[in-house]
Length: 423
Image: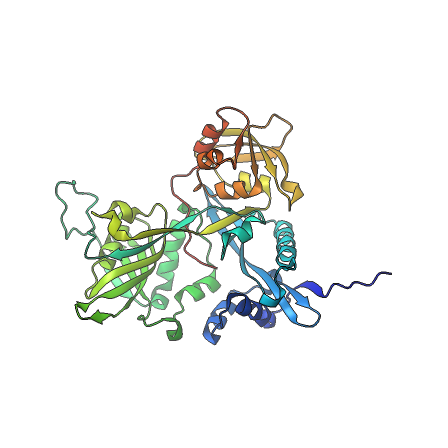
């Protein structure tokens, strides 16, 4: 019998006590000595049976890839999605195929678990495109100069914009743990309308409201700002501030973690406050949406200092399950030909029919209308990547005239995908 000479062994973790194995690899891969506090926070949501490591016979754990079990909102619905995380290879063991081995193993595990898609934040985009991930959601980071931006009243005419207009309701300041139930209630109300947002169980809310002083980087403790309207709490903002002074006086900063509003009144009131805090001159918001309403409520949009970056990368793991789980903004009846080098079960021809009420996707032998790689299907999945752009760039091939235009209207959605949780 042949004896294996492969020094590497892939295995799945079994207990939370093995948490340090994955983070030891990550510390080396990313050059980051994680603090004990940061590790304790990550341990809150760690799932050992979703974390895989490659161990070397002499060096121990040298590569890792993990995931969290969460749902994600998609156009018109919700699907189970593997939230891929903790991916890295030790510097001394790169270029040996370990990441490929892990990612293949993980994709098959995700499919076995019945999760139609996987998604992640990419440290570098080219890495994950090799494994079928497509860029599905952008983030618009804002560095707002509050002296140069004024919030208009959306209910007033452009000819008369009162600077002190305030929606009906009141704002209330609180510590996030004190109003956790209110935060959860608002989030659950808005969650079904926002593609890309992830479910938050109690462990994720524990993480959200925790605020250890060692991780504040000179900022105050996080505050919760609640908007209370006639029907109760209609929105909240999580924010903190940093005091900065110079020769020209105070120029402090506001850092906004998230603004969640179930009503336009709540959204306007929360942002009006954040843009007018005394002794501050800058508001930073790292995870703004591509369709952030604030851009259309200010007199000078350029003062928002928007920078575009990538957010969620999506990998379709089960084509028929994924495409039938979401809804379509217009009626669609199209035959897609999909290539997938890693999951052969996705490859082939699929007939997708659907509308705003439901969808079906099944194998077919009918003539192909559109042809694409699995990564392009992932880019389209949340409704934020224009099909026309992928067709114009040659990523999606139109084999039946007019098919791309018809499908583009269907795959889009009335709200752009965004992401509030990094993982």
